[in-house]
Length: 147
Image 1 (cartoon, rainbow, N blue to C red):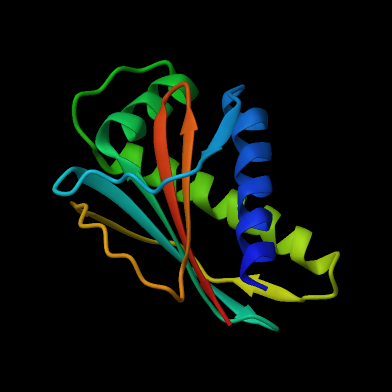
Image 2: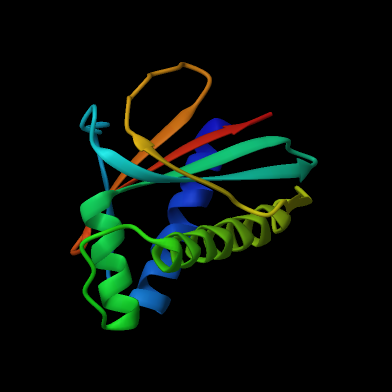
């Protein structure tokens, strides 16, 4: 079901970016996270018919551009306001993905987001579906690990 998981989360992300930010998003063919770049990572656990987690990684530039687009405020730093906003966007994307999964008779629920700020270190793992997405505000990375 990994292809379905990836397409489900891509569809949910695309819809939320269009609805909330007024932005189109495209899936890139290659995973191209820059090592060492500061990122806001939002981990959301799924429970139910599928269990596991999804980690949304927003590079600093993308994170600040999203905050500016939604709030109209410029900021040079990732603060509590920014992380809260990104956590909520990730929560909405995950909720939409769970709704899509339910149309396939796959019933899941999500736990509250866990937010960390760290330097990105890309680790490729065959059991994870990696999505590299591009929008006008920058790139976003999603790591989907469900079983």
